Image (cartoon, rainbow, N blue to C red; front, side, top):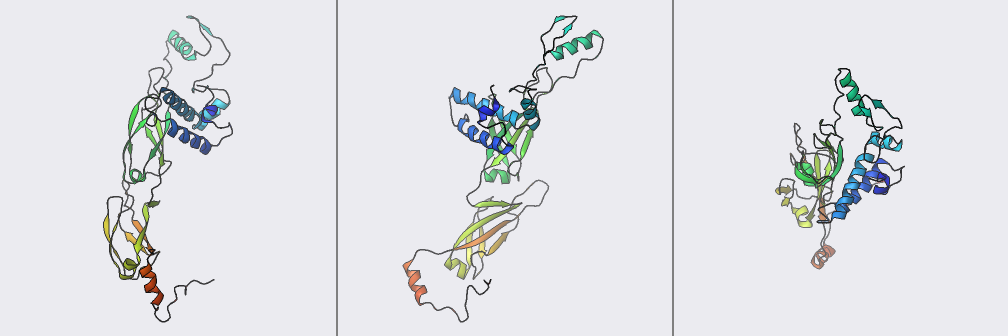
Length: 288
């Protein structure tokens, strides 16, 4: 892999947010689902993912910038040469050297090196983030992994999948897979802690006379009673219809009414002759 900064198209001074933004943009363009049977796009997707895996890890990024590891995350061998009773070795083969030395003196071999962690980004919709679910992710090495999304996760949450990272080069434990979640905004619902907020349009008639209307929720529509003389901004609370996280009480859904005025000649004719009640002033409480 060449320079990870060039692969992501960012300068070496780029912030973590800039690196993440560049990765998300490229990953969406090059994802195998968006480019079926395109080997070049798949290879580029792997390069972009590997570059992000290195630069999103502050420790690895710092080591790369210092020249201690290469773009693949492998240690850069120092310019020293060692010899042992088993013949000459190439510089950098320290594990084999130490293993031989320990074995020659009857000691224990060094602990097997753990595989590297992998990082990835996964876009999920608002409903899945709120109620939980499962979604498949394609990894740069060609594997497909089903990711379990817990209910109530927030944007930027990192999920750790143990043993789903890179294999150990020495037969040790696999690394982990770290998945950063990116939640796509919903057209109507907005999250406020564990509560869900919804602006609900209602007609003038429904606001003035009251009545029942159908209101969408995360778990399906419900009938809600609109009080008489409601105005734009009136808040209704649907208890237990918000985010439900494991071990915690469910949040609520807060419905804010928005009175919709239709484009109607009949309504304009009626209002032109309508006489407000004595003392009526809709702006009486608006003072500077």
